[in-house]
Length: 380
Image (cartoon, rainbow, N blue to C red; front, side, top):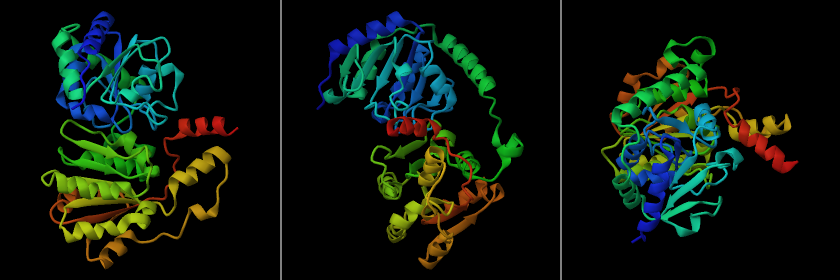
């Protein structure tokens, strides 16, 4: 059992009370174990909530207090708020605060703030940043303990009004129109559009198992993980193909929950034969393979950083659907939004595994510019 620092939790609760509404929350993957109590804490305080890329899914992104993801491929509002001056306390839950979680250790994330960090591993407390209130313990124990000691800052109705006002202001500032109602670039067929549509048609209890690649950056930004859905990514190790294997494990662990694996052609070439395992066990997994006929993360990384790249990062397009057909699997080819509708998802979930090849050119620049700037600084 993990030790629970009750005294540390009490001290942290005192600082949270003193902060009033001038606080924000950053959730890592460890916060997912706390479940609904994290939502209850945010609502009790009226504090805005961002997650790290691995923490995505730990807080419903359709909630008015959600800022989305901070770190790699961050949502603009998450960066604006967490790097801004509108809060004095940052509550960090279940994050190792690595490069990808902190937007390359962005100084503005912590400057001039009181840091409260909750983690079950004592080695993580204060490892990256000086923490004023470290709390050792399982989040399933610590968060309920905080709730017992924290009266509502402004009352339940007040946080809802405040959250609605903030969400409206953020929406006006970002001015992002819904995909179906947009025009021009918003309706263009590309990886971003495909991921956004996938988010729209996914079941309300779907688990997304994300692989590693260019499509990952679009997924972090454009998959809206709602209450009841789940999101898994092994981003720290960065192993291409890891999302395919994790989808198998997730489906076996929760057979009643639909599993959608989002992977790429490069990942599929490395570990795609695991779809045969899904076939053998008749696992109803939807394998969405983004096929841009290149190693997109490497290609765009080189183009952004060096303004050139090797021809070897691209290859002649291989029919992923053809491979699936040869393996005796259900398959589909998707090359437009019209082929990615709710009825298609319903059909794909209606049997064993299915391989859905999403054909794109991959020429748009993925949301990874801040990481490239950081690497340029480290290189030169």
